[in-house]
Image 1 (cartoon, helix red, strand yellow):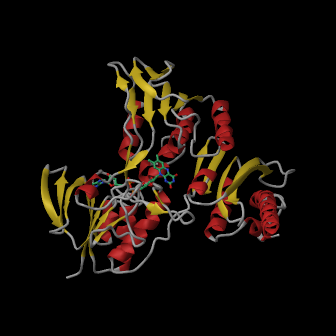
Image 2 (tube, helix red, strand yellow):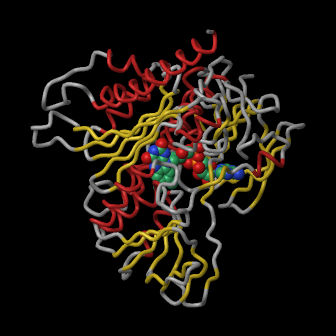
Length: 461
Ligand code: FAD
């Protein structure tokens, strides 16, 4: 009989794996168990769906319904939660939420694609405190949407990308928005210059930004910070980050990595035979540092799901790792990054140099040209490109994807100047922003190399 492929989790990694396995092995018996009522939806689209007048209907966020999967011979059971994995007997215990009973389901190959959970807010909550919403799933978005009527002020806890995307969403809905970030600045993982540009834009759009103190209490229509600041809040959105959903895997003896996410091979295999894992619940390997990292992103989950699907169907695909490339929008700005910042580069054993340049996105005299802040990092001696962060109103996506390609190809600072890009004034300055940044950094690298050569020469003499 054909193999029975069982998949736990049905958003990005799980559904991608199911569809890929079906293409690779038309005879495989494939069943997907999904805790939520919805399946195969774009969580990334939720902040845009919540903006009225965008013309995004809820069903447009759903790539494939259970019926569509069924017509491809993939059985999808929604509101079915896997409670236990018995690796010895190769069965999982499933709770059918609708019917209210549990049953055992066997597998030949199992994929764990359980994703991530939003971090819970830990604060004192008084009786008349504002409601707290999260935004991880489409059901969370439904709930959040139901809380909004009658609310005029919202406090977003967390100055990461989801918090910032939602600041724009709430502002467009006419709410007064405040963001609270306990670290000294919003976007703590980005360079300070980039974070400052973003903060200025938030404030320009009327968003209040509070940094440096955690939320300690929700009290009578207010959020209270550790320094005593009270911020009016009709609603609180807790967007403090996520953690990998690994309890099910860990209690079955599946090994977790240093990051706390499931450890997998390049073939998305766990330490237990015939059990694979992919998506936000697993850790990845950084292409440059070779170190493990946790990169809970939709495109990564999809690519890992594809590899898992091929391999569950008997193939031998490999996931090559990640650079940590990401982008998001906040009001007029796009903010993006790829590779290692100086601190991560240092930890990985490089000797990083970094420069920030401000360059026009197109020929300076074109009306749609906008300043672009590019922060480029490279190894001081070899010139190997290590990382890039970009913020601006124009050409951010193009610049970051060029840099991600350059990093993937192990290019050096001197290579950037020689790349043959398309140029005409409406599209780019005569030297692309990535080339200008590369040239500036290449001078630093060339000088550092000359100094090193001189010191070695003196030492030999
Ligand atoms: P998940 O999406 O977490 O799905 C896992 C599923 O498994 C869930 O439905 C869960 O209910 C189910 N499950 C868990 N445990 C069980 C169990 N025991 N039994 C049965 N089912 C179970 N990424 C980007 O790259 N770009 C973006 O712009 C972007 N924007 C985002 C915006 C928002 C608001 C959010 C929330 C996320 C965003 N992401 C973005 C991240 C992206 O959505 C995730 O990386 C992606 O959804 C991960 O997919 P996944 O399948 O690994 O996990």
